[in-house]
Length: 385
Image (cartoon, rainbow, N blue to C red; front, top):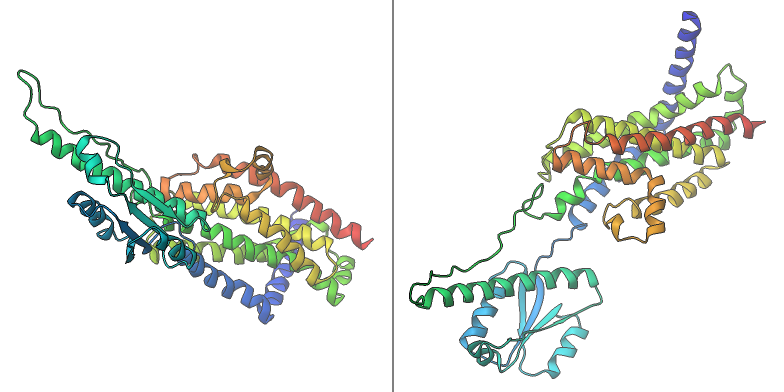
């Protein structure tokens, strides 16, 4: 019994060494392991952000009173907005927006100061370029915050300047003070980068594992492997371990870079991060080997990998909330392993989660890995026969 186990481990070890040498000796495979993960990490980390900076805007101030100047001073003093022009007539707005010289135009009507003085609603027009709805929506949120702060300061000044009625207490100006947990500065870079290691690792692992069998089929060596004294389970393990090792190395490297380069805090347990990455990589290896076992050529494997990767990334909740998707699509995301690793990584980095708190993200990935690995092992022999 012990000799049989030792012999099986030896056969698996030889397969692992063979796979690692095949990957490391191939320049294209080496590049897949090192080049794209680093490039994607920096591109996503800096380019994929929901924060707005230097939003170009123009002003059409038809009031010219001190109140309107006070309001506009808040915009000019904000690091989010950049004034690109002052207009003199409504007819200039359309051309400015059409040429994309400004993302928005703030229009203050001529009755602005009079309405404020009479206590009537003072309307400020905001004309937005809706071609980029994401930018327009976020910019509108910043504008509302500035306007609300302007109203609060005026209310506080008015309350402080009024003498209290006889025997009545002085009313204090009330305003809400927000406090955000886990991401106090509302930095979208923390939100993106905390899950980036899982996303990029998935791309690397699924490509490496999907090429594993099809590379040998294309070269004609897979039939020799099947007639060698290897069991299907040993072949499966030997093919799965090298992508897992390289994927784990990439995942840990990108997680370290998230902390050291981007300053994302790792508040949770390192063991929880290791467990989440290991189980996720096992799941993705199962998907990749299943694709590889269905493919006859490396080109088919690459095509199958990209067919899986694109929907998986979109449906993972990486950039868009799953809750905003249609119900039938939300149900489909339960079969997507990237959904769980994205949630687990964000819980570990930002919330300070440990193994107990991410267990609901781990067992679904194991459920996904079991049928894909089993189907890949069965197809190794079935397709050869």
